[in-house]
Image (cartoon, rainbow, N blue to C red; front, side, top):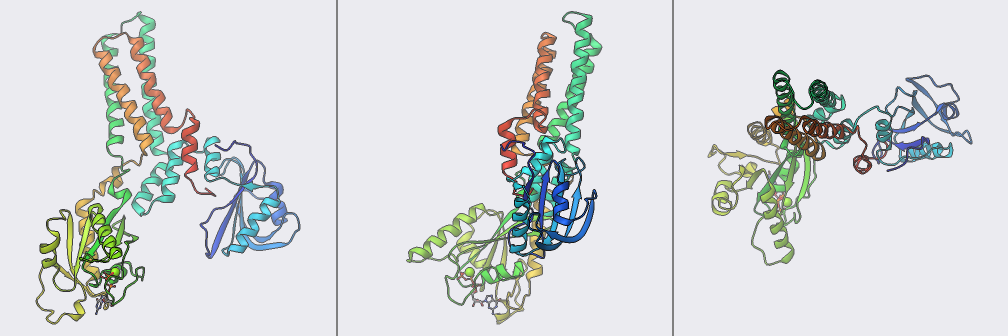
Length: 448
Ligand SMILES: Nc1nc2c(ncn2[C@@H]2O[C@H](COP(=O)(O)OP(=O)(O)OP(=O)(O)O)[C@@H](O)[C@H]2O)c(=O)[nH]1
Ligand SMILES: [Mg+2]
């Protein structure tokens, strides 16, 4: 990991590309001199100043910006921070970045702001991992869960659990002072019930972890059907913009095309595929193979046909596809006899944008019926690393309870419980493990 050298660091905190605004962020031990060079004014803590921004060395005007100063230690990193909101063009943000470097700052590594925040005790590892999850979360519910962590509520809960076990350890120590290797019956039952209580709390966190569940990772919906039946047009109509190429020529879509949107707060990945047909051309049959492999990964399939999707399903897919599906008749505007509607088919026209809302309602129903949205309110967002440590901690408790039951010497029980405390400290990063810390922060983006 990068050393904590307290050098002034700078990064563009907003994503690449052109936007209305961009944010350039600096952190360092003492940014007052640089602030004065940038603005020709004295910094005021937590004050957003609308001002001209000057190059610190040659005094050229760089842009008109809003610059906010956060004085150490009351900032995200615990150091002095300058946040510059500038105009969003590529040239302007780069010239401000270069000006900061000319003023003595260096480019920040990915995650270095959060790393400094962690080193200065502003957040623990649980919260750092939540920051990372917020940045990468695709939907509102998972972002909300990550925020829950960012507020440190789970860390506090683990803190309480840890101090409960430390209480148990001190009861044991007291008893041992009183008698060499025996603990009294009342202390024994108090200790056992405390350990069982903590074990059930830990197991609750592990069991309700939402990592890997659909609410977090999202669901995959595949659009399947014969060539030229309007699959890509339907894909675009659902998304509300032209993402996939459509044309009257059969075999237009050769490779799968994916796009994410959000429904009921859950991330949804919609997959447009090449039509399924028998073809002698190698490229076409590769596309078909890819479609069929996508089918196995899907949670839900939209089976599209411009004639009768029910017949298509029964003749081609019933044997192969066991998961949920929705039958969609496409190009309904061309139907000769629109009155012969079957109940289990959704009739759509991408051209006239009809039936699309009904289809979205049907997908929402699938989500509400199949995804436990309670995960969102009761779930905990823990990573694989945290989960492994909590499981280890729970095993320590099992062992300690067994040792107590078997009447094993109390100092051995105490050492098992110490193992528990170490595992809990590891979860929140109280015992810094260089490799783990490096791994967590290196997954961050630059500027965070
Ligand atoms: N009238 C009408 N034409 C449609 C509709 N949807 C698609 N089409 C037309 O049907 C043709 C094929 O549409 P695509 O969306 O490219 O079909 P596809 O199933 O993705 O085709 P492949 O990728 O080749 O398998 C195009 O000419 C579209 O304009 C519709 O709702 N009504
Ligand atoms: Mg297509």
